[in-house]
Image (cartoon, rainbow, N blue to C red; front, side, top):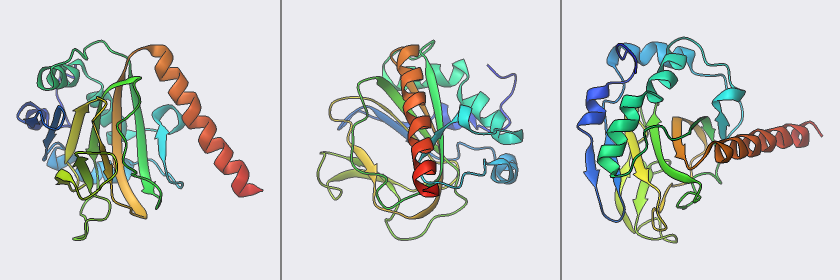
Length: 212
């Protein structure tokens, strides 16, 4: 693990609130060190398309690169393991990054069975008063209003959950800048490579279609 955390506030993850209904999830705020906010904003990758991008397809530098390393630390996996009651230490991990959201993004879903657990760390300086773009923990796969709670994607807010057949979540439609780093623990390295290839190919196709 890092000798010291300069971007993540690891104590916030240790005291994150755990819920077990309707599925296992944890939620918290102040997950980013106050002194890292400006540098993370400056070092965030220059992404110009909507969607999640694998970290390998981006140029991570400065504080942002440090943040990714800290998220991948064994201590973060251990904390998530203890809170979500599932062993994540040593599991293959994949990080994807989003800067821009399209109207179609955020649809209600549970995540694929290849994913064991997922953590989202938000990096937006502020958020609007409307519900648009706010993450919702949901009771079913059809109704955005049947929610357990709603999470604003302001910097330092974070959410992690244990994937299940009923781990419904999503965010209401939003178009614009919505910065988030997503880390997923997967069943195997083969699952990691498959998902990375799928994500990279999808963005490649979008570029081709846009040029055409």
